[in-house]
Amino acid sequence: MKNTFGNSLSVTIFGESRGDAVGIVIDGMPAGYPLDESAIKRAIYLRSPAGDGYTARCESDDFSVISGVYCGYTCGTPICITIPNEKADKAPAAHTVVLRPSHADYSQICKYGEHADIRGGGHSSGRVTAALVAAGAVIKPFIEKHGVFAGTHVLSVGNVCDRRFSDPASEIPLVAGTAFPLLDASVKEEMLQAIRSARAQGDSLGGMLETAVCGLDAGIGDPWFDTVEGRIAHIAFSVPGVKGIDFGGGFSLAGMRGSEANDRFCVSQGAVATETNRSGGINGGITNGMPIVFRTAFRPAPTIMKSQNTIGFPGMEPEIFAGSEKNDTCFVPRAAEVMNAAAIIALADMLAAEGKK
Image (cartoon, rainbow, N blue to C red; front, top):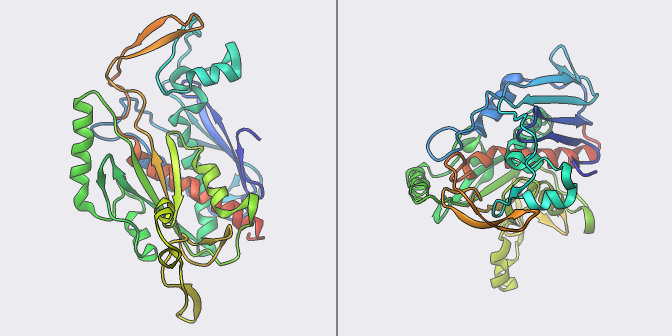
């Protein structure tokens, strides 16, 4: 389905940037799991703008759990969460649209026609990720009950880089629950300075996130069309701004010889393991018991303060899109909680498909 991800445990997302609310329906969550509203609130807070270089749009993000929970525990029935938009816009649609460079305005008009709601990006807006984060917080206890843990950190902002995961089992707790998750906190100020510099020049910055998953048994996933990489990539590319993903050694493997790229098997603490993890925990589309490690590349935020040439639609006359100070200069730090939620949802669906309750 167009707005649904997952088979055994699925999420259906809804809402638009300037509509009355965004929200999500979680179907397949087993009964008996505690629903911690403070954990949902914390997760949503971690993706909210805070500090220099972020959007001026501030929402309280007060949410309501409409169904699927009784006396603080999941019922096993669909869970619906809504998050009102305090910045909802009741203005009628404009007859002529100035197409914003690298936004989805034109794409959505082509798909939905005259009824497309493109205000603030509409259904393609990053605003909708608040609902994805809420779902991740609800589902997280399910994967953790089965010994699976996920964590995401900011790998780069522009050309300023954090170090990569080297021991995910010990490093995931270091980045959990932080608003600007880093493995090396000493690079934070340099990253912030890069954001400030771009903003001072009326521009924006992209970057990368790195996500690690520990605790998945070997043998999960399927070859060909339901590979573990494919399932994770499917939901990762649903996050606005993501333009690339790689696993393990990723694109660097293309420049190696097999003798360099291969992960040699060994025995560690009485279990099968590999000496290195350039495959990112996956062989043949199936988990091999090592940590899953993947990186996602985010394009720079398309709304910048510089004026840009474009056209009006449907007239196709030349226009100037005026710059705006209201949007993120770099949304990568905020997206860390979003990508972590996406990983949790993908993992939960895979675990549910294996019969986990």
